[in-house]
Image (tube, rainbow, N blue to C red; front, side, top):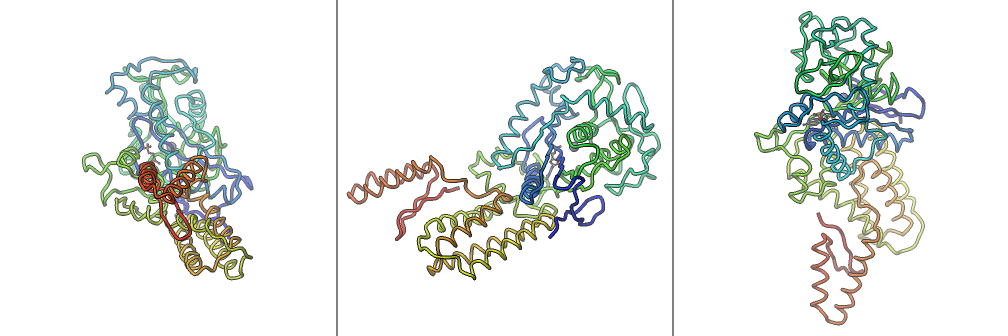
Length: 478
Ligand code: AMP
Ligand code: ZN
C-alpha cells in the first residue's frame, strides 16, 4: 500500500511521491530558544519523530532539518528583561559568538536533553538562524528582485497583494487586506493579515548585523525559508509544524520562497493539532502549564509521556491528563511484560501456521495503518490485540521458542516507529542478574535479612522482582 499524508494545502489525503525517488526531504519548525519547551511543543516534535521514523522504516533515504530559532522578538524581549547588552553588531561573520547566545545556548542544550529523554531521534541538521545571516540576506535580495517588496524606515516588507498565491495554504482571502498596512511583529492573527517584515532595521538595544541590506536583523518567517532552501533545495517534500504555524508563518514562507525561486516550495504540508491540558489551553495562569522537566521532576517517566502523545492521532484533539498518562504507562507495560514472558519460553519447535498467519496479518495491518497518514491509534490497537492473542498462547503453553522470536521481532520492528520499548538489557542488567542470583542463594541459606536487603536495594533502583514458579523475573517500574 502506498504512503499517504493529509496535506493541509489541498485538505486531502495524498499519496507521497517524493521529488527524488527513494529520498525524503523533511523540514520541521524547531524551538524558539528563550525558555524550556512545553509538552504541547513536544506533541508536535513527537509527531514529527514518528513521521521521521516511519519514513525510515519505509526505506526512504531521509534528510530531516529542524531549525533552531535563536533570533526573534520574544528572545530579544527576554534578553532585555535579563539586562543582557545586545547592541553589538558582529558584522556578517556568521560564526563569531554573539551576546544573544547567553540566552539561547542553555535553552538549546535543554531542548536536546528533553528530546533525547523523549526518544526523539537526531535530525540530520539543526541550523541556527543567527549563523545563517548571509544566506538570509541573499534570499531577501532575490525576493527584492522579484519586485514584491518595499522599504520603509530601513525595514523591508513583503507586499502580499503582489503575490497571487497568498492564502493558498490557510485559505486566507487577499481581498480583505488593507493595502499598504504593515506588521513588524513576527506573530499575528489571520484577521490581522498585513504586509510582513523580511528585514527589521536596527533598533536601539536590539541585536543587529551589518549587511548589504543595512544594519538590522531578519524577521522570523524568512529564517525558515533560507535554512530550508539551503539544506533541502528550493523545492522539497514535506514541511511540518503545529497548527498555529499554518498562518502566518507557513503562509509567509510559501509566499516569499516561491516569489524568489519561481518553483513550488513544498509538496506536502503536515500540521498537528494543539495539545490541551486537563481540557484547557495550556497557560501559566491556569496552573496547567508543563514543561517536560516539570513532569519528570514529579517522577513521571518521559517514555510514558511519549507514549501518551503517540497513542493519539496527530490531527485529532489530544487532552493531556494524568489519568491518560497512567493509562499509557499501563499499556506500554503490557508490551514490555509480553517481551519478558517471551524470553522465558523454552519449549523448542517450529513456527506453526496459525502463528505465522497471526504475525503476518498484524504486520501487514500495522504498516497499512501507519501508511494511512500515520494512523497510530489503529496500529497500536493491532499490537495490543496481538499481545492478547500471544499471551493466551503462553498461558496455555502453546508457544515455541521460534514463535517467541517472531513475535519479538514484530514488536521490535514497529517499535522503530513508536520508540517505547525498553532498550536491550545491557551491562547494568548483568549486575541486576547477579544480585538476583545472590538473593536466591541467600534464601536457600535461609539468610532472609540479606535477601530482603537485595530486594530493597533493587527496588530503590526502580527494579521490581516477581517470584514465579519458573524463577525470579524482574522489570523496571515507572
Ligand atoms: P515555538 O517554539 O512557539 O515556535 O513552537 C514550536 C512548535 O511547537 C511549533 O511547531 C508550534 O506549532 C508547536 N506548538 C506550540 N504550542 C503547541 C501546543 N499547545 N500543542 C502542540 N504543538 C504546539
Ligand atoms: Zn519555521
